[in-house]
Length: 180
Image (tube, rainbow, N blue to C red; front, side, top):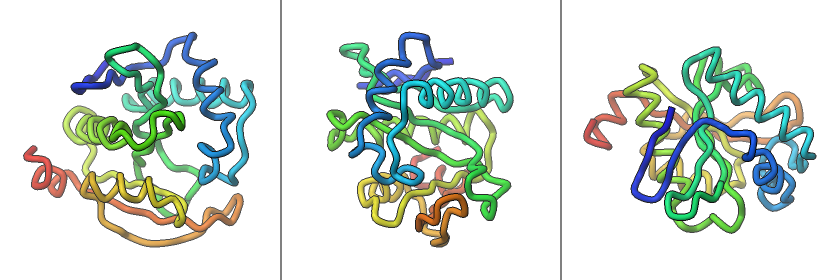
């Protein structure tokens, strides 16, 4: 499974992705608004990576590795998952992303998430996709808005008490906005 944009390749994970992903997950600034804000060890990243791959096998959709087409560097990830950490929104599929800090501010998250969103509606056959971010994570909120997502609610993640915002988009809304 591989998707592409002008600047990016969205693909399944490879063994050699673990170390660069562990660097991303180990950066306190990257992880500031993720979960309880803790960084991940290499072992925790390996567990998360295995879980991302299982998602593909179990559901036929999942989290893509995002690499720069020009250099082949792993910039981070973007894709679809079931947000089990927030039971009140289930059943649902969430679009999310995480990039290494040096890839911020270049439109990569919007480009990658837009392609993953397109995949979710056109190839995975989803009717509605949500996105969840910490209420203070303004950069992610901007990406969600650029994708055409609308605000649904604010709530708190039960496991760690962090306040989050939930946005959503339907297939019909996506088609109107993105000419689908």
